[in-house]
Length: 162
Image (cartoon, rainbow, N blue to C red; front, side, top):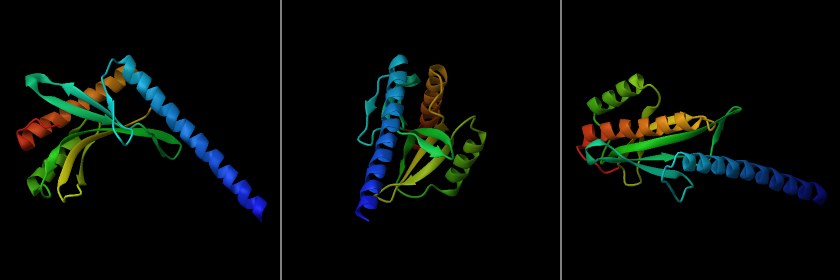
């Protein structure tokens, strides 16, 4: 009985190590890709990458990209997202309809809401991508997310906070 428990513990540790190695490789690959693109980034406490874009009109917008990948079946994906802003309460019907219509019209990506700890709602634009995108395509999608979220931020909040 003890041998089985020890064997199970060794096997679980080995599998966890393989999973950690795969996550580290994914992070290393993404770091190298962002470096090749000459993008300045910082790492968040959660291990995600934060990239701030300078946009037209003196505006700026931050885009985040997950350091870790996730699996859907055998397919790996990672998310990149950019916040348009946070509302104190649930967006009204017209705002929700606009977000839904914009999601349907987006070339890629969608609008999402996430409740904050304080009861507000963060509105963000999300794009799910495969981790093997080439440099040009990753750069284009990061810029697309930044511009899309910034336009919605200006529309909803008349501000430049993100």
